[in-house]
Length: 218
Ligand code: SAM
Image 1 (cartoon, rainbow, N blue to C red):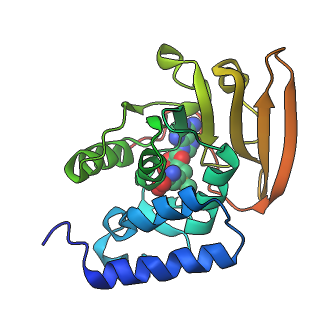
Image 2: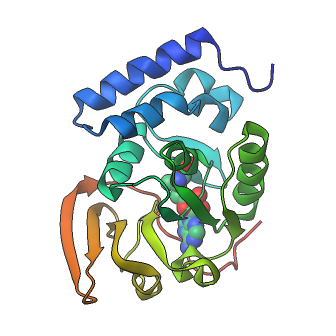
């Protein structure tokens, strides 16, 4: 069966949720969402047995599906409310998008690698997840046509905070972005009503780097 989600998968997922809870994820809504999304369906079949291990894995085009703890950590920092309009930069496998949709977010996501964009678009539709928009392009520029957003999450390491993303955030909105070249500091930026940005740091992570122009696309 192509999209089988067996008792075994569900059992492994439950254990994964316990594991990330023990690692410090407290938001029950985030844990519930991680418990619902069948991560094994977002990975190549050769990696199926690793789907419920708390690790990042290759998804093709030199990219990875993020570690479940990292997905949960970034999602928790976003403080998602049901109905929030969320922009995700770096669709990758589409897994993070589905976690956000399970929490009731309206998801707009953009991916810079065409093969991954095409694969995620098909997969989400096959699984019945309805993202508001799945785009192919440079997420550094955001998605101005659909702005402003309540929340923005960047899932690749950026060397600077893109001004375009700050501009596309609503007052009161939150941007979560890993910042740095080799390793990244997880930054949470709150945009206040007076257009002031309050930055917080939330530990060190290692992400694939955010890519620039489309010159190397296959
Ligand atoms: N969120 C993804 C998931 O759930 O599978 C994992 C993201 S992976 C760690 C980072 C992704 O960001 C890769 O798919 C990469 O191609 C994408 N990316 C890198 N630079 C980008 C850019 N400028 N705009 C959009 N996506 C970008």
